[in-house]
Length: 436
Ligand code: LLP
Figure 1: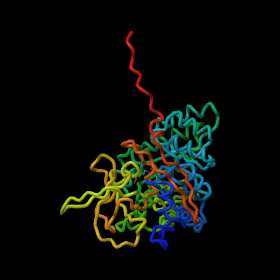
Figure 2 (figure 1 turned 90 degrees about the vertical axis):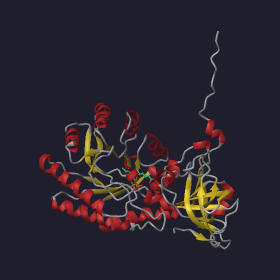
Figure 3 (figure 1 turned 30 degrees about the horizontal axis):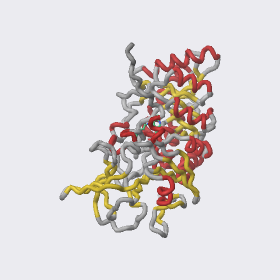
Figure 4 (figure 1 turned 60 degrees about the vertical axis):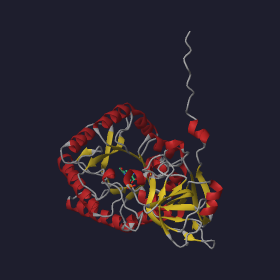
């Protein structure tokens, strides 16, 4: 997929660059991003809205992968940016991302984070709870400026997805409940204070979703509420944000629909709802993360040890694991892989790919058909671009990998590999107290 192909040496090539050469140049584990594919996804989302002639913002949910370079690429492609922490906001600002296109999320934004967001004049704050409203008010009232906000609501829509990543159901830590008066109270609170400029409503129903029904239902519920607020208080929403969550293909088991199909469905429903409730058509915002960068990322590992458990299985170990991709261990996520230096080799054995962390659960792929793998071969795991590097950690004191962008035959290092010195840079020596 994307610009991936097999070159004349039988090596996996991405963006016109030989991944084996990249592995040799930058070491492994190595994250490689297909920039052309990210651009294509971004354009597909934007183009789908453009065809409908509606005003829209497509915000890249940078939690999927945040770094200076990806934020700059998002800016170049005319995307907006969803950030969920001071750290993601800091990255966006450092990358020079236009602050008016930054949307600040989170269920427990601190006073410092909110202050930072207001100082930089972010485009909107997606307000999640009453405590946050209080903090924003305290910070904003003295400045005399109204803060643009969306109210995040929990519509009680259950998207068909993995349990751990359900965020739109009723029993959720996120947002104001739509059905029990919480959202109404938040609405009154915001409308009654000069600290806020209420743009509209936000909801996010889950992640890795393959159906459009959840988005339709969410749009209906949100609109019903906004129409109620319109009748009772004359509120006219200028934005509806339906979150992210568009699914991608990790393995053959996944059957995603094209990006444009989600957009078509969302736009049609929002139009229908606006008409039915006699409201002007609001701007439609979405915030995809995974579907912009997920299948653009590939991780290259070096294969090392092998263990045969007779009549049971063969473990092939790589030089990374749950430290650079925690998704298999955390969610049972599945991936496909090839030997990057012998892509077309005959797949003669079935092996399980183990990470190098000291946990039995650190397995990347179970029962993968591969050509016979030797130490020093490179394993390419596909579709690691979302929630891979961004959830990487230093378990077992493994340095986090480097990240390379490839496009049109060029490779650019965009995140350096961590060094052992990096690992101890914040450590301080223990000073034994000297007794007098
Ligand atoms: N907007 C909000 C409010 C979100 O909570 C999320 C994801 C997104 C947008 C982007 O969703 P996406 O388009 O990427 O599905 N770590 C998990 C995924 C957690 C998603 C959290 N929220 C994983 O690796 O599958």
